[in-house]
Every structure is written in structure tokens, then in C-alpha cells.
Image (cartoon, rainbow, N blue to C red; front, side, top):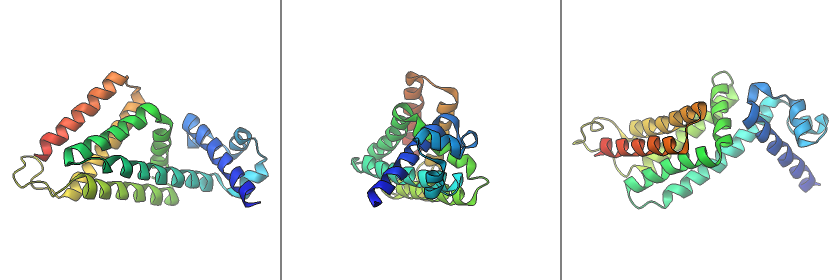
Length: 198
């Protein structure tokens, strides 16, 4: 019985993911999701009372999955430069291989401006990613000799790096950059980070 319940819940989350990545939160109804999942509306509302509950559950699942992937990706790096490149590669790969995931994160971030439960999830994700960058990507506080970053803390630097990656992802999805343009943008970003951190 529990397996059947979990299977129907997963089926609903997968259907919600497909619809939300295509149409966005504002343009999808509970009826749309029930139809996409091929379940009765009553079963959908049994699992998720409101669209907000459903979207929060989906976002929570995506946040956990992506955070684990980022941790795994950067742990392979031996140096600060290599870990930074691996983090950048992760964002670039999400944009090229799974843009639907990034679309949902961006939609979720926008909704968080007005929705308290979404805001909690987004704030949690950003804080955890900034901490990860600070603690596992940056190996030290920026050098006092650094022309650009010498007077800033690793905490501030990690937030700027995360903001740059997230903002770049938004621009790329919005404008539909080609793979070559994407490589150039991320290559330049990596070079700027290397220059600034020396």
C-alpha cells in the first residue's frame, strides 16, 4: 500500500516537473497536473492539498538532488582552481543537458519574492551553496595581496561567485545562447575568477 502511494506521489511530481518546466508555475493548474499524471484530481489533492504544497515538495526534491550533485562534482577537484572550474562546469552542464531543471529553479526563485515557504527553500539553497563555495571551493580567505579581493571575506566572495553563476544561467536561458557562446561566457567567468583571486 505504501509503495503504491509513493508511486502515485512520484508520478505526480514527475508530471508537475514536466509541466512547470514547459509553462511555469503561474500557467499550470492542479487540473493540468492531474491530467498530465493521468490521475484523478482527488488523488492529486490527497497527496498535495494545494499547488503551493506540490511545488514546494518538487522544489525540495530538486534542491536536495542538485546540492548532492554539486558536492560530488567539486569533491573531485584537488586545487581551488580545479574545484572552481568543476563548479562552473556543473552550472554549464545543467544549462546544456538539463535546462528544464534550471528553469524550475529560476521560476521558484521568482515566486519566492512573494511566497514565504518558497522563500525559505530558496534562501536555504543559496545559503548552503554559498557555504559550500566558501568552505569547499575556496581553500582560504582571499589574499591580502590580491588587487581585487584582498579586502573582502571568503563569505562575500562565495556569494558573488554564486550570484554570477546563477545570473549567468538566467541570461543564458532567457536569450537562448548557442553552445559556443555558452563556452565563451563560462570560460571568461572562470578566467575572471582566477585573476581576481590571485
